[in-house]
Amino acid sequence: MSYLTQPLRRATVALTCRLSTQAWHCPPGPPCPPSVAWGYVGRRGMAGHSKWANIRHTKALKDDQKQRVIQKCAQMIKMAVKEGGSTDP
Image 1 (spheres, rainbow, N blue to C red):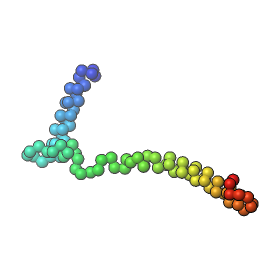
Image 2: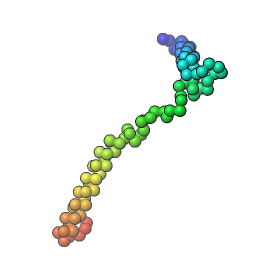
Image 3: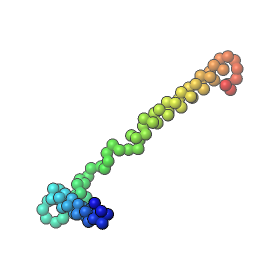
Image 4: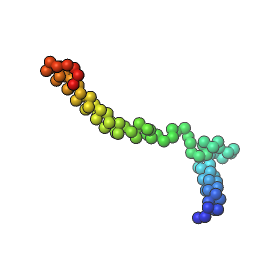
């Protein structure tokens, strides 16, 4: 399809979709508000798509690595204190 006919096709598809959704969702009479005509009936958009859901597993791995380093340093400090040395490993 050429770039000259794309806007016309988009306009035709948009008009067809608008008319078909109004026919399915709107009662006969005055035209529906745009939110009802496009199928919005009070639902939240994109449920379950959050940034936290996308980074949760990566963050868990990095937190585990940090915890291991901190635990190793704490263990070294404990051993140094038990040996009678200073708290500086």
